[in-house]
Amino acid sequence: MNAVVLAGGPQDDVALLQPGAPNKAFVEIAGVTLVGRVITALRSTPQVERIVVVAPPEMRDHRDLAGADELRPDGVRITESLRNGLAGFAPDDDLLIAASDLPVLTARATEDFIARVEALAADVIYGCVERS
Image: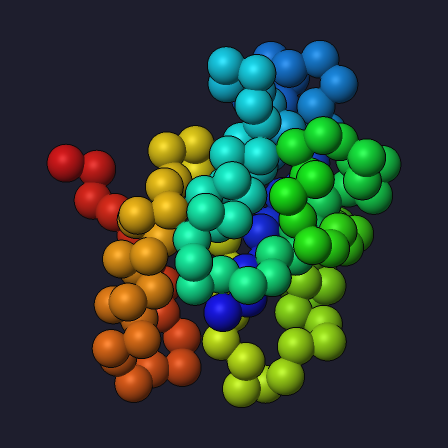
């Protein structure tokens, strides 16, 4: 399975807390950006083969993006960013689309999600977790 991580978007109130962060994906927790944490979890998931990150082009040399296989430019809107991330994949490719602001994502949770998705005969599945 391939993964696309959406790490684009404008600078918001969260990003303003981290000098130099173009958006919240590049805010650090204990020295690792949010997007870096997501990439690490995905890279540690055996079912994930390729990771494409969609982020501001000026961040291409950021240390936390080193675990990605490819960096693609983000768009003005999330729909553009998603389109950029999906470009080049075949219509029947299995893709995991992940937000970059998931600081507690783990490989175990990703493996569980993928296993549950593979058990279903669906074209699109949106995962979410209850706050409780």
